[in-house]
Length: 119
Picture 1: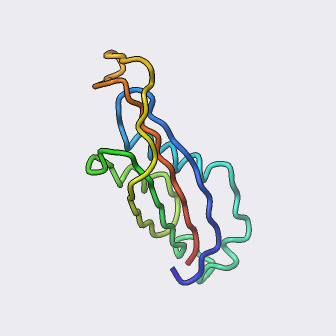
Picture 2: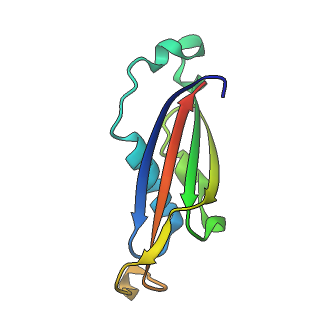
């Protein structure tokens, strides 16, 4: 990315089911869906939103190999998306195991996202 223009952070949780993808999608959604970048087209090459570069950094507590990166990409409506995964986030007790919610144990997964936008 030549020019970094915008960074937003978010958090997502999967309370039941131990699904890091669900928590990561929620973290990205949380990071980007409360913002607007009205001037972004003016500064992008050819004023084209598809020339935007979006780097999604995810801090995931466990099960990184099960992350569905395509589900993360679907949250980003424009541009070229790269995804970086690192250790972080949290796995902590939800206080209850609910088999009808597909729980394997009583853990909830919390993922932190940083979404960087530029060109």
